[in-house]
Length: 393
Image (cartoon, rainbow, N blue to C red):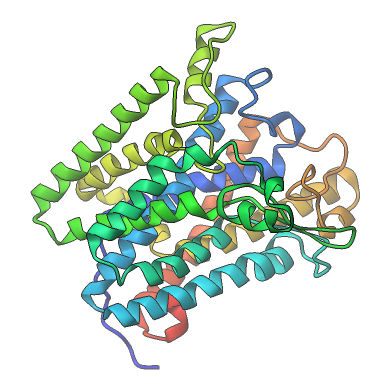
């Protein structure tokens, strides 16, 4: 195949995306090796500060993926026509949906093809949001801004609507603004963990934000910092008022530390307005600061260049680690090939399963280090070649 010149990339975006990918692996490591003792990090009655913030820091992952997907789409208009971008978005979106519902479940997560229980998560959400964005990019920026603002600022008004009010159409409401089963029968169940409406608004906002990467450097950095600070301030004020923006208000706890945890315990699904402000405010500040990042962070930038490849690979490695633990410690691996349940996810673990929080951190670092050489190889391949399929990994 012919060689291709390096495609223009924004290193700061790759760095922030890479940091988020590394952090994301911490949450998935906790899922796979943490066990019951680490399974309820946001339960105010049982959590600890260390466990809570182990989960809390990973809250930044999904919003950042969604935002930066929109940013990257807008930047790509510099080398694609609007029609080419729309075609890429809806085809990549379809691929991500299939990847999450089929490939991830069969080859990466569950290692079976029975589809007895399937949970669709981040890639499913990103795929549907990209398909919606493919249509939205034909609208004027002002119209996109109005749609995104209404969805982000107003979707918490819908929190009290029960999907069962829609009868046979309940799965449609769950898909748009809920969390629950799209399909549920004795043979097959499909659980949607990521409702589309608020996440789509985040991606649309990212698409608008992408325009700042055509601005002069100093102006862009100032805008990102002040926009991020404004979002952080908005979170603090709205959360303190405790009247709107999250379906679960914070409440004083038995200790000051517990009260702080309650304050920061914003709702992720569907992502509340306060959740979005809390997570994306620091991300915008980080995007500005990342433009002057030190060179020693180059390995993180490499991971940020191949996020989907890293995503699939780190899940596979975690499953292998869990398989080895199950074989050595419990003398069985059959559970590693069974479909889980909503209460036993991502796998049906034997009684007594689970590492301590410190060992979970050690395992997380080992996973990131293990997958890095493959990520470096694949990033080099994407830089050298123009094969069409590389755009989908």
